[in-house]
Image (cartoon, rainbow, N blue to C red; front, side, top):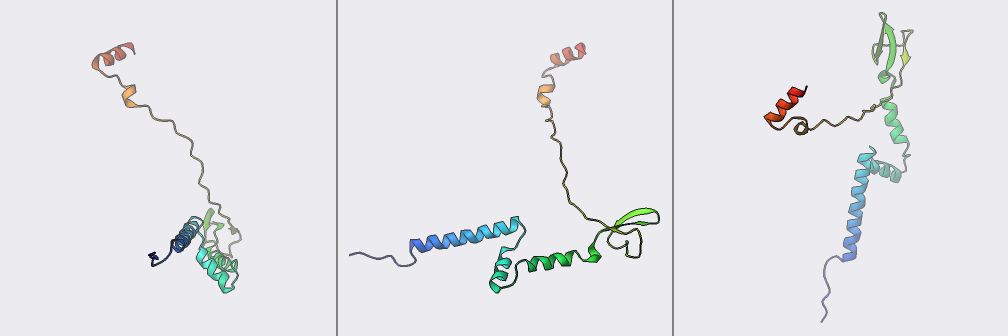
Length: 130
């Protein structure tokens, strides 16, 4: 007599685990590239333009009040988003480019055990030879 297994099949378990893995990969991808793939997918399903949503957010952040400007106030060059008004003739908009710079490689520090003499006799010899 042959008994059939009850419950979900092994194939259904494999499909469910693949879906969970794809969902986790989408979350990790969204975090790495600072995008919300789920909101983009929902917007695409709703028929909205995907490019319109990020463009609206970028327009809100680059409003004229938040633009960094350079101007001369009392003979000093000032970089500000509030003090440099449109009435000041020396006002110029500034484009900010974020850079991290380059660190030069550092030489390893010498091992103190190798540099220092081990016993008193070696110290005295080294002191005498200087």
